[in-house]
Image (tube, rainbow over all chains, first blue to last red; front, side, top):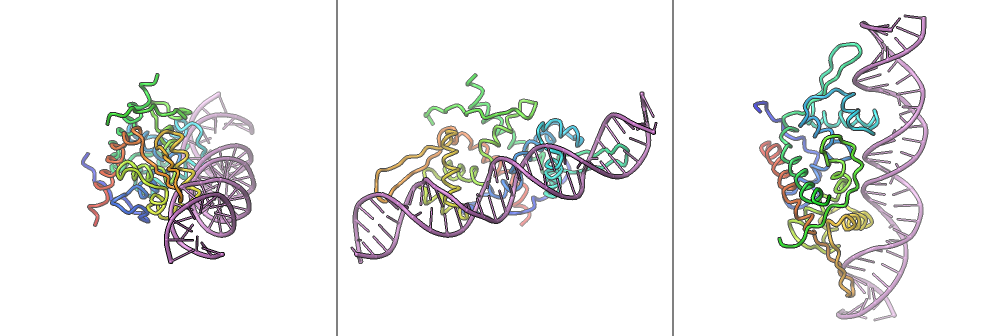
Length: 119
Length: 119
DNA sequence: TCCAATAGTACAGAAAAGTGTACTACAATA
DNA sequence: TATTGTAGTACACTTTTCTGTACTATTGGA
């Protein structure tokens, strides 16, 4: 990965005392959809709006648009519009988002360790 | 760590197609406070209600109680009441929550890599 | 006698998050 | 000519999340 990683825009209000970026992280990727969107873009690559909508079965058009705009503002994804008709818009994870891979792995592994053995 | 790890109660509706536990994870530890509470209990150990409230500066009494109850129901924390006056109640991370350490490390590292260099 | 301290509960209400429906533009296709 | 497909926007609405205020119980100490 040779692209530059942009710094995370700080939206922190610093609730937690220790060196604890958790409130910042939560405000950046919290909510029902953002982590799911990021995971798809990071692991499955660029996706069109419609493809995302289909995979996030249940998300409303409005909400998906909102979340994508927010992620774009926070530089976690990029949006590319093709001047075609019907319109085509592609969303991709930025290097900053791709750099979250380990977070996703850690979550998945935690889930596996503690959930899969049950069946 | 020799204590048994209890299985995660599944609340999944399986929105995401791949082997993607993200919706489950979000429904378990999503929201403004849960990850912060867990991080404190995992890394700093058992805390009394009042201590938690002070460290989560800004959280309302009601919300803190709610979140603690939810985490307890999901077996991520335990609650121990001492029959004293004034009352003393201590909250601790369960092995299941302690097993999330790597998730916290991954998040902190991601934040460090992409945020600290800015200053 | 009155107050402090702790961990709550009850309730009203505000704010945020999320949904559903209807609408748009425009070219290609049937 | 009517229909399809895409990526939206606008707006009303519901649901969930979160906060603020007031209240409780009990004991020890001033």
